[in-house]
Amino acid sequence: MENMFDINTVEIIKKILKDYPNRIVDVLNSLGERQQISKDWLVEKLNSYKYPFRNKLKKDSISIMLLCSWYGLLAYKLIEKFNIKKIERIHCVDFDPKSKRIANKLYRKIDNENLKNGVLTLIKHWERNIKDMPEKEFKNCEILINTSCEHLDQQTIYDTIDKTERGTLVILQSNNYDKIQEHINTVKDLQEFVSQYQSRLINIEMHEKDFLEYKRFMILGLKRW
Image (tube, rainbow, N blue to C red; front, side, top):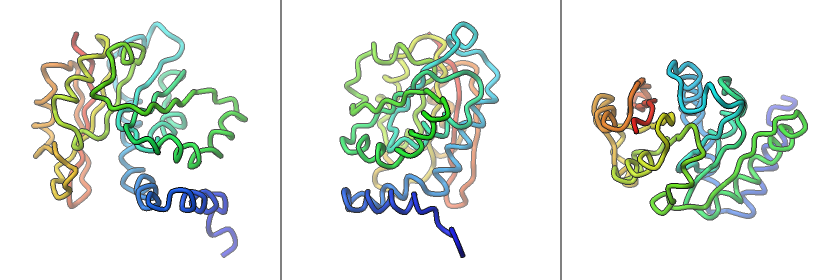
């Protein structure tokens, strides 16, 4: 039974519980099994995407923007497993003012280990409502990722894609789980999800993962113009 639990992780959770007692369930949910599976699945399909996105062949490193990033789990999955290019920086965008402070506590040990091991990817948390973000903030990212389409109205998603440069790789996830009040924009199946973006994206790859009580959908495609 020795070392059954990671003591460092326990201490981190205790600190978050002390400082943000109303958020502990939310933090634990952000690290749950299905979140891990969905994020690993995304990085796997990203690594195998066969079409050249903007600056893939021109620059030594790229920047990635994560919309509705929560506490940033996907950012650390990308640092660990993304193998196409060096990542210069990852912008984690979320409207929640506490997400940055909680993320800093949650991932501090990993940040220190990455720095010690020479992993110099900068993770920058932006407290933003994505509806209000100016076009210029989207121009420097080569990859735009939004794994929370079910939480956003459709026009907001369209607007974020429209603000990116031509050839930007756009990755989107949604689901058909409509039993949660916050899920205001679910889709019935993968084909419906794809059809929403065919006028804005080319070279679309589509994927589906079955979680029994619901299905998660993912598309990867290049911004048309």
